[in-house]
Length: 90
Image (cartoon, rainbow, N blue to C red):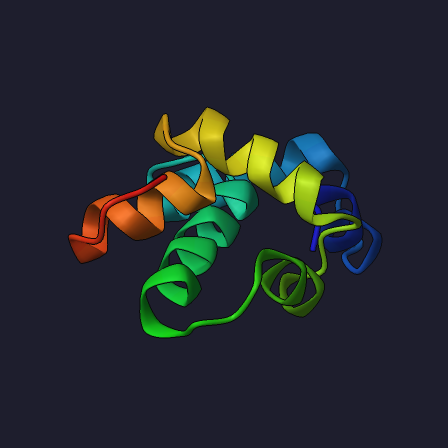
């Protein structure tokens, strides 16, 4: 899901939708943050491969998801899975 997709399903402009979202929830639309939280959840609760997680969450490629996840968390998906679960990475 993208902000554009949300805007396309409302009668509001992007600016108006973002204003309402911020007014009601006190923060901007955070679709990427929600997706990254979901990636983290799946990394910890499943043994799914990165391509399977990416497909499940609608990323075009697992590499794109990995780059976005590292930018968001500071760790690659593999590092995150190993670090949080206590498993050694490498």
